[in-house]
Length: 116
Image: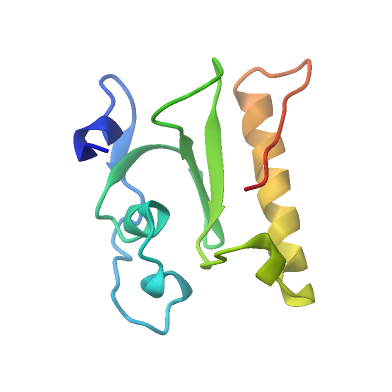
């Protein structure tokens, strides 16, 4: 995958991580070497729709629907099966943010969510 695919013309393209770039291993995403970890560390830019201390949402670079975005936690969770009860609030927050963005994107007649 070419990195320049993450830059979209005429969009709000900027670093996802802003001034909070870190390689400190105490930060949960610091050990995340996936493409999402690189996004969180500001190594790759994206079209951000929303961000807070717990998650970020951005448009998919290879959309399979007219409106296709991802909401990912800042905390590194490699598999849903590895979550604990302590992650419940975060997981609910991710779904709530997806619903809020869907509303803003005009998806008033429903939408589909995939949890990967």
